[in-house]
Structures are given as structure tokens and as C-alpha cells.
Length: 401
Image (cartoon, rainbow, N blue to C red; front, side, top):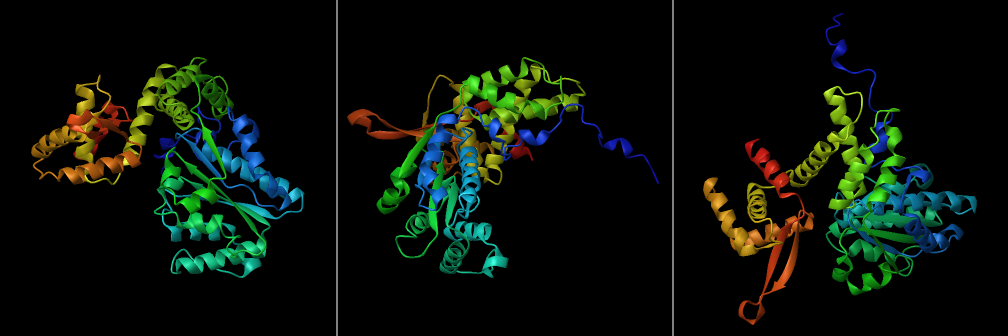
């Protein structure tokens, strides 16, 4: 047998001891959730009746990306299931990523599939093929057959197509859909104004308790990364790496996910360079790589004109960095010029306005209504939330691909 490929893989990782600690979806142990003691205590208080088989409060949690909302919601739910079990109460929780399961049918199917134990209920929850009402009927049967109380976490709830599932879940007991099982709904959103667009009936039943998670400060980010530093081998992290990464992340966004990403990327850069330690200089490179990868993921699958619109805003942002935002018409002028360079017919101003709204929905940019006084009336300004240089670089790469 040929041994020519034996040195292709590294058998001993000189940098990482347990890289899983630096994965975004990794749920830390109790001692690793940092800087959210008050929020955890308040969430626990809101769902506390569930440990006695009573109805927990429905919750709505707001905050920017990477402020620990999902982490704390999952953590509280896991703890509740354990403590309720000690009290003789059968409970469980279901987690739905509404960015992925954004229709009512997909969401209710995911909840039912997560909570169902076919050996107990003799019910099947297929991936597809059933009507929405049938999925609901099976879900209600699953809940009443198996559980005293259940929590449903709807992460990025603002990505749902409509409010229907919120109405169904929050009013299931009142509407007589459930006989014995109690449901608590935890909605999580990055958008503080999400509640404003809810149906009034949903608002009254879902928004019993509201919580706002603020961005992490530099000290909290430092503690978060310190708590995960055993992802690296002893002595590998230079002392200045975590403070520098924390300071960078706090200054820009207070986002723990991005901070952890930066730390992981810094380790990978050391690994690929053949270094024995993770050095401070790698942090800046890692930050740029994290931003680039995140933005590349956001625009993956977008249309050429969707990218041209972003490119126009990036050009304006780079050429006039002192400006806080740009009018739709100004963006459209630059967009038309880009279309000419690309030999592509421009879309209408109205369609470009729609594309800008879509980018705002993805948190790539921020929109604000301005008043130009009686002479001009009101208008919309758009500002990139991403680094315009990162946007320009990724868009050039994408168009060249």
C-alpha cells in the first residue's frame, strides 16, 4: 500500500485541544455562560410555574445578534426540564430556527417531530405531505399524550411568514385544543420593533413578559472568551490575544458570536502558518476573515442586481465615509452606473427600493426615515451595517467567480 498520502492529515493538532468549544452552536456548561446572570434569573422566574405543571409565561426576547438570547433560552429550558422532572412533572422543549423553518407548516412540523416519541404515541410526523391542520392535530395529541408542560423556542421569530403559529400556540389551551398539557412560547428577535407589526390578539397573548438583552461590553466578552480558552492547548494563547479580540468586538458590535469566531479564526491562522502560538497580530486578520465569511454567507445565492445595489451603497460609503446614510435616489444613480459597466439593464427604482428593504431585513444595512421639511417631505436613508471594504471585496470576489 502506498504511504504517499500519510502526511496529508495532521494527527496531532498543536493549537486546539477542544475546538468544539468555539463553535457557535455549542451550548456551554453552566459555568461558561458569562455576563447574563440577571437575564437568566429573570427568564427562570417567568417560566418557573412550569416546574409545578402550571402555565409558564410567554416571553419575547429582543437584542442584537450575539447577545446570548438563544443561548440563555436553551439553557433555561434544559434546566427547567430537569428540575420539573425532579418534581414529577413531565416536560420538554422544542427549538425552531424560523430563518430555516419560516412557514407555519414547517414550524409546526418541526415542533411536532422534535417532541414526538412514536413508541409512546404511535403517531408519525412525516417531513412533508400533511396539511397544516393535520400537523397541528398530531401535535396536540403528542402534547396531551406525553407531557404536562412544554416550552417552544421560536428563534428569529420575525422571519416567520405570518403570525398564525403564534396565535395557535399561545391560545391552544384557551381554544380547547389541549386538554392537559400547558405550553409556553419563547419568541426571540433581533428586531426591537418586531412587536409593533404583530396582530393585536397575538400581541396580548404572546407578549406577557419582554426582555431586552444589551450588547456585551469588553469585560464581558473577555470573560466569555476566557471561559472557552481551554479550547486551546496549554500555553498556546499569547496573553494579549483575548483582551485584543474583546476590545475589537466590543468597539464594533458587542457580539459574542463574532468575538468567538475571531478567536477561532486566530487559532486557525496560527495553525495554517505553522506557528506554535496564537499571536496578537492574528486577531486583526481573524476579525477581517470573520466579517468576510459572515457577509459571504449572508449574500450567498443573491441575484446579480441584489449585489449591484449593495455595491452601489458600498461605493458611496467608501467615497464619502463622513456621511451617515444615503438616499434611495442617490444609491440608484450609482447602481445605474454599475449596471452600465456590467452591460446589464437596470431594474426600476421601485424594485431597487424593494431590494434595499430585503437587505435591511437581513441586517446588512439599516434604514431610517428622514424629514426634508415642507419643501422635500420625508425620505429614506440607507447605511451599511457591514464594513464597506468587506462588502466591496466580497462582491468583487462573487462577481468574478
